[in-house]
Length: 405
Ligand SMILES: *[C@@H]1O[C@H](CO)[C@@H](O)[C@H](O)[C@H]1NC(C)=O
Image (cartoon, rainbow, N blue to C red; front, side, top):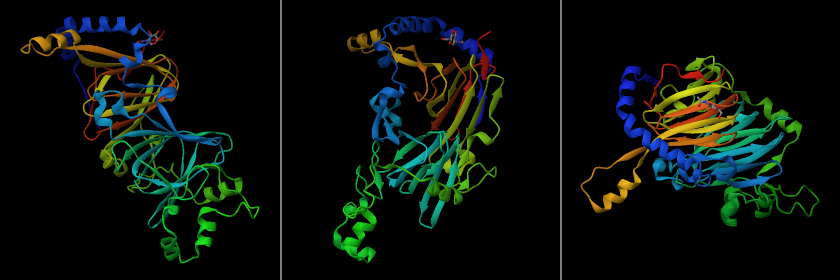
């Protein structure tokens, strides 16, 4: 990604010219901010983790949740309508059963460790993924996910880009559980018998686990996240490749490691790691960049904006205050418009602020300037949509400064 700065003097000149009209908008908005109820409405870019996720599946071993549609919150981010965010959490020694989906996924490990197995037409690939590893899962690829650790929960965020429908995607599970049927059960008896060259009874027993309860064998699994035995995990680990190898692979399938390369910006207040589509085939056709940013408490990520990328920020650890600046059509003028058509449109500056904590999501539209104040040591992760040839403009000399002591 190219990086550009606005020369400070030029910026000051622009600021001075703009200062008269800008101040009114900000003061006006601060008045509104003090009214608690209107805060969420005023800030359509903020998705707190406890309110905006919809549970897809949940049992004692973990859960799968999907974030509300972006375009339902505000028209200002309508172009994100074809992107969904999924969160997966699982307990130690568990397995998310094999399935595929009608969506491309970009998967990021936020916490813990995973064994990810991808089933391709020409075989299987198993990878050990750790915190900061990113893996692309092309639409239709059957995969399963294991949390091999004895103590740590696994936490994963997936960017989903649906194929058939701009808003929705479906998971097709291979095995039958109490939570859902195997998709193979959708086929007729004749098709199954002919395809697998077996008796229907046998197919039912082997593929769908039917008739086992009566024979006193293990009953059907309770859900799509199940417990695994230590021996099974050890066996899976033997066949998995470590994703932390240094070698930059050109393969579409190898995981990317955000943290084993040099930060693109770094100083005593923080580090910014980033992988862009220009150099990485995994990210090219998705046109997405990914970033991971560490900040020390008391650090300020100075105002900056992206020229064309829309950024989804996921708070991973710690807390921050964020300020995003956008433009809103002046409401009074809007009313006048209805009477006198000739008048020019007028916009006022609006500040959208939020206190972010773990698991919260925040959307930063392209060209909207943003600043982040670290109120504790923190790490956040970001997907940048529309990433190719994006430029990031910092509006001050240092990318991060200190504000305390
Ligand atoms: C950052 O947030 C803290 C706590 O709210 C506040 O005291 C401080 O003034 C803020 N710093 C900046 C630069 O906004």
